[in-house]
Every structure is written in structure tokens, then in C-alpha cells.
Image 1: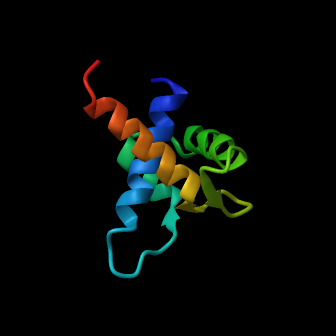
Image 2: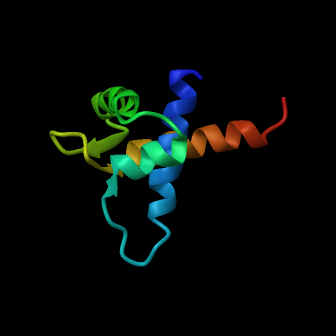
Length: 85
């Protein structure tokens, strides 16, 4: 799977967290389990995403949240998928 697809999956999981009344930081272990990938693989993706400002994470890459930039990217991708060419 491509980095872009992994990133979109992470963003979708983090965005889903915003739908609950009091959103919390999302543990990387939960994300890795939902994506059926190893924690070390996920951490590589998280580092890149944090570098691009799409998420915020702690120093140990254990807890994550989506940023406005990440939400905007996810929204743009969703509109692209829904818009036929």
C-alpha cells in the first residue's frame, strides 16, 4: 500500500475520533490494530505526517490527534473521490 493510502487511513481514524462528545488522543496501538499493521510501520508513517503538519503526536509517537491541515487534506481527498472525472 502507498504512503498516501496509509496517511488517508490514519487521518480517517483520527477524524472519526472527533465525532465523539469529548475527543481524546488516539493511541498508536489502536490505529495500528485498525489498519492491521505493525506499530513500527505505523510510527514511520506518523513521523512523516507530523513533519508535514497533518497530525500532532507525542515524542514517543504513542498518542495522536489530527490537525486542521490534516482535516483539510482528508476533506480534499474525499471530494476528489466523490467527484467523477
